[in-house]
Amino acid sequence: MTPIVSLVGRPNVGKSTLFNRMTRSRDAIVADMPGLTRDRHYGMLRMADRPVIVVDTGGFEPVVDTGIVHQMARQTRQAIAESDLVVFLVDLRTGLSPQDLHIAAELRKTGKPILLAVNKAEGRHGHPALAEFHELGLGEPFSISAAHGDSVPDLLDRILQALPSEPSEGIPETEAASEVAAETAPDPGAETTKPREHSLRLAIAGRPNVGKSTLVNALVGEERVIAFDMPGTTRDAIEVPFERDGRKFILIDTAGLRRKGKVFEAVEKFSVIKTLQAIEQANVVVLLLDATEGVSDQDAHIASFAVEAGRALVLAANKWDAVDTYGRERLMVAIRQRLPFVSFAKFHSISARTGSGLNGLMKSVVAAHAAAYRKLPTPKLTRAIIEAVAQQQPPRSGPVRPKLRYAHQGGTNPPIIIIHGSALDRVPATYTRYLEGQLREKFDLTGTPLRVEYRSST
Ligand code: GDP
Ligand code: GDP
View 1 (cartoon, protein in one colour):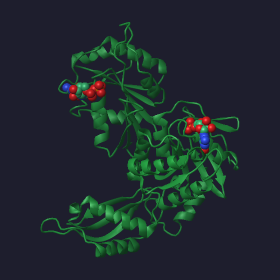
View 2: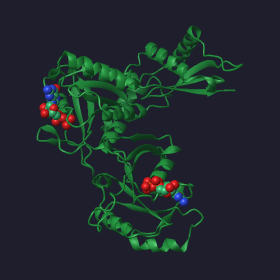
View 3: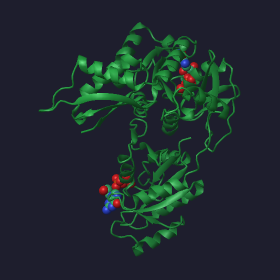
View 4: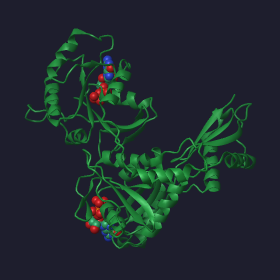
């Protein structure tokens, strides 16, 4: 599972500042999920090539009426419980506060690994005031400045070292090995081939009550389940391999689905972290909408996170059996209006309860996966680019016109197309979208996001 690091501390110690510093420079995906979590931010970033989810916890509720206890927000507790590591931030300028002591006591009880970082230490490293933080009983305080960046790289190193080592999870060795052999044999030079990328790892994401458990049971229940129980990790990662129409899938646990007897149940309340983790672990995401409810902010946030993570995506409106023609039309309008950025994804109307539409849905899942991993040979890509330019040139920028010479594929899931030429920094976004459209059509890339990057030689 993708490890989770939460930033914890009382208000104003600098959690958001540290969060921003960690995510800004690192090509991170940041998800704000208003409506769900008013004041929490989630970032997915790569640290030494390892995906890590960082949670900026809202922190603590303001002093409650009793005036004695500073209550930790329930959501913060949930985030801590789901974390592999807690970075506990305190403030050197204000010094140790009673609230810090309360938080430390609560953190110690969780048994989670904790890194104590003393923020706002610019110009004050080794300052005598640091010593008082020993009282927290959390080991050597480590001074940083989130605002100025001092020692933040060292903190990141420490975080990496403190994370659990990467498990060799997922696909059984033999399957992965044979699949890779088959995939790579004709093209041993393909730089992006990684074993686990080629199994179809499916996450079914959506708000509570959209019908995720019902859908999972409909898909998995009636089919042959290859191996139900995966060895439990601390957070009970659930991966369920199943077969459908002769094709193998691995279902990734999303929001707290748990097997009870032979069926799945949503036993936990919705967890943003679990949803993000599942999206990160999957290569295809089905975003389940509730046709009786329309499109919500949460739906849009989950969709945008999947897109930014580069995952292939299929939209499914569930409970189609329960809406009339008017409701159906209204939903289609809402999807166009609120989810325009996923127009590349196929849409299906389904009923998890009756099973209608599931075959079509799974066909699109398979097609989206194939598109995400499609091999795009350099000559064909280059020809497609040249044809697109012949049809419509990139606009002049002052005296220069960008020149697109050739293209090659830089990655899969999502496909990355790297275009070489000159003055390419002047290609406007609208033209890039035009190229994306052309490439989608030529290479049948329905269902997957696409990244176009430019490399100028002059
Ligand atoms: P949060 O409530 O814990 O998320 O704290 P914020 O990140 O919003 O920071 C609270 C205040 O502390 C802001 O005014 C920041 O500019 C300031 N701050 C954050 N980090 C530093 C730092 O390293 N040095 C100094 N001097 N101020 C900082
Ligand atoms: P989850 O919280 O996303 O796992 O949602 P559930 O699978 O528990 O479903 C929530 C409710 O929606 C349950 O009462 C289901 O019976 C109902 N439901 C699920 N799928 C359908 C469907 O296709 N049609 C109708 N009418 N109800 C459904």
